[in-house]
Length: 267
Image (cartoon, rainbow, N blue to C red; front, side):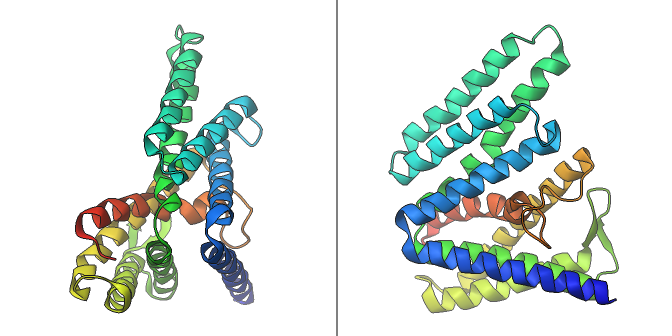
């Protein structure tokens, strides 16, 4: 019993440290925030590749993906998103070249090329909104996803009895999923009432959409880890695992929020 309390304390302390770093970057904005996003992108890409290629496999391919991802992020930050897509296209060209040298053995041809492109689409492409959303919007989506994850963790730990999807994530419960949704709706409604530019009731369906994609992103990353037969994507964050373990929900929820907000102008 005492071990569990120690693990919980480690998780909480790490979470508080991450909050401090995020608040500082959001306060400073500009280059500090961009550097933080680029750092998250690089580490998450490395962890993603490690799931399939091991901790030291295909180093040149990883470095190419990180450089291309950074190019996408920097150009979007410079308000040139159309040029950022060129880097995604360049990634496809590199994957195609890799395929050309291995096409006679289908498994060897598609596996590295597919993983390379999946990494670019999964991490830097979905991180792009972080480079242009306003501070109010970034705080909103970061907090909404964080509260969703935290609510799921504590409600699931205390009341979880029914497995949500045991073959994908054996530790997640249906009670935790409901707690995640309730926590997200409460937060989004209060935040919308305080800072939103439209009726706060409109934040209820927004919260449902955000929470759905946040939980979907969490389950997707869990499936990746299950396929790779590992518990965590990395060990950088004590009590939390790797960067990808913390960003998985955000990667799915943030782009959806960015698109929906373009249409309905919540802030």
